[in-house]
Amino acid sequence: MAQQEDILKRIIGHAKEYGFVFPSSEIYDGLSATYDYGPYGIELKQNIRRYWWEAMVRMHDHIVGLESAIFMHPTVWKASGHVDAFNDPLIDNKDSKKRYRADVLLEDYMEKIRGKQQKEIQKAAKRFGEAFDEATYRATNDRVIRYQEQIDDIKNKMAGYLAAGDFAALRQLIVDLEIACPISGSRNWTEVRQFNLMFSTELGSVSGEAATIYLRPETAQGSYVNFLNVQKSSRQKIPFGIAQTGKAFRNEIIARQFIFRMREFEQMELQFFVRPGTEMEWFEYWKAFRMRWHRALDLPEESYRFHDHIKLAHYANAATDIEFDFPMGFKELEGIHSRTDFDLKAHEAHSGKKLQYFDPELNESYTPYVVETAIGLDRMFLAILSAAYKEETLADGSERVVLNIPRWLAPIQIAILPLVKKDGLPEMAKNLFNTLKLDFSCQYDEKDAIGKRYRRQDAIGTPYCITIDHDSLEDGQVTLRERDGMTQQRMAIEELPAFLHDKLHLSALLSRLLD
RNA sequence: GCGGGAGUAGCUCAGCUGGCUAGAGCAUUAGCCUUCCAAGCUAAGGGUCGCGGGUUCGAAUCCCGUCUCCCGCUCCA
Image (cartoon, rainbow, N blue to C red; front, side):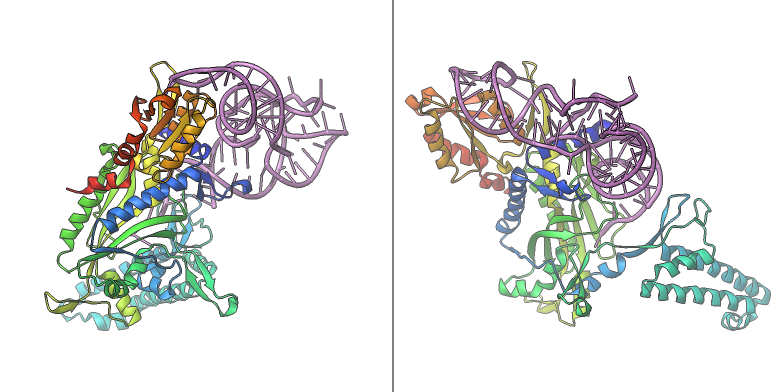
């Protein structure tokens, strides 16, 4: 474990040194769990995004794209459940170091009273036998009434404090009731603090008149609220999907582990709308397809696994994760959820607009079910980077650091290197460079010894180096050096475009997704 | 938020019983060399030692405060 963390550290160091990922605002000591993508990082990230997009949108004629705004109407987040479900008042016990939801502590306390009350009632029921009338007893027995008053009092106070956001009073209530931590038994509590998962800001420049709006915590809702716009404008029939990539924001209490968990991150999500009752078939289809998408990259097969959810979220009737073996262990990379009609129904209810589809085959309208695939682009980036990072000892005892990035996605795909910096070799190399850069991401480098330049390219994961030597001037052949095996072959310049296209072009990767 | 660790050059670090102009290796840049798997030669650039205060003739070094980052715990639709 310690060794694995060490590897993550070295990957982070490498990512910084070679321009993949920088800590954000570094000259101001950085901002926790926020990172910037450098020159090579952004190339890799864009290539991953493009692979996802083409594999989903272009390769499926019933999937179309969308880019919805990060800002959305505040009611969207009420409908989705984000406002209520992720607005927790939390309190810590200073002795046990355990954190609780303040409202849950109070609920538990009320439950205890209710238990006593129930006992009282049961005792009475035994005593009176058949003649026992619970309603009357509840209304007349002093002890039961007192318990009920206590419960109602706490409930009212709690609801009032929560509604008013008065956390000091909420804490005082816990203190006054002498509620103790179930673990330490201590009543040594911190302040109550609000943890809302969503970032909020204000729309409009005059703050007094402004409405509070949120930065979206997921892109999915943008696809749901545009369901009819997309379906009608692109004349889609169910089943069809809306693909979207974009930034999302979650104010995690703790965001850590490099770019694995960030407060600002990028999602690549598909919302696939299906006829109710067919959702499990589609759930299985997307499970299989998404795994095929991953497998096509040739990362180690054992680095992937499915993790089926046993405890399902409030909106789902089936859910699985694709987990990846990151340096810190298996963690969620992608989620595939059958979300039923929860979201569309919620938006119908809150907006008052119908979000239904008329199915000509069934001759009826219905609210479609949704199967969602959601992958974190930054997590995919980290998966590729951590699988690619290798420290190798070569046959001659020297060492190299190489990134075995899937060659179709490499930030620089080809380096063009004149063997020496004179005798017309740079000119010939530059000519080749100017041709190849139209189709591939290329880099020209003439500085330092050839071996050193190979190592530099290894460090950023360039799959092919093309070296021009003195013979090249005569016979028009160049040396093609391959990254992973460090093998070399001579090839005529005119053969290069076709060869490189087959090896490096995105189409070669996409074709792997076909049966 | 609690506990632990750490902040000196782009990176890895040394210096920290207070004392010359804060160093090394790698990296970078320019030049030389011309050699198909880095670390040959010459030169250059790059640091207000996280920040603030205190002690002192003098602080990277000692004291106090503070900030930030990393790890663990709590949370994670």
